[in-house]
Length: 202
Image 1 (tube, one colour):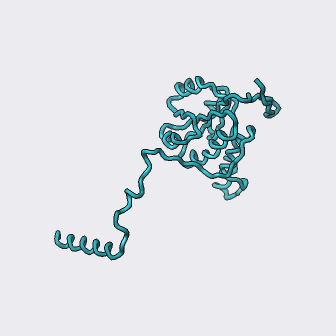
Image 2 (cartoon, one colour):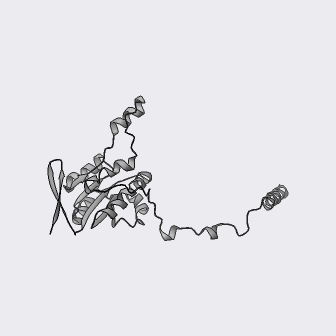
Image 3 (cartoon, helix red, strand yellow):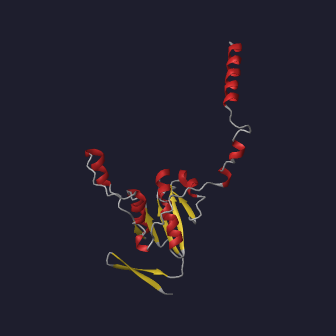
């Protein structure tokens, strides 16, 4: 099977051509941050041939990810031991760490899988919050996330964020709106009648 060789920090890794490549994206929380990872999920799935994308998050955020057509499987953070065993059985090729915390590092150390992450800039954030010294680069967090997948030639398609809703959770606006069109006179009349009823009750 032919392979593409990619140089990573003076080390060469081989990416199989015309085979599945299993990625595990890690982002435990929260809703807004998970939504901000959606362009990386979409572009990784669309731009890497044979990409199989799994996502690790906390159980309470799984519903946000389930309708996403670019995610093949969702793993939720149970107890540490069981989650590690579950992930080991998947045989991932690479981890894309978009949380970059001690917890995600703990998983990476146990799984011993090649991992790519992004510059979190904690020091720069600390300087800004505590001393109002702004050393943060003028780059959006989404574009910083993309640095984690740049080695695979994945680029931001500039199509924005994804947020998919389950069919059973979608509302039919025609059914939700009142049958009669809004009318200021009708509204005033309803308020007046309500006031009369209140006075009678008194």
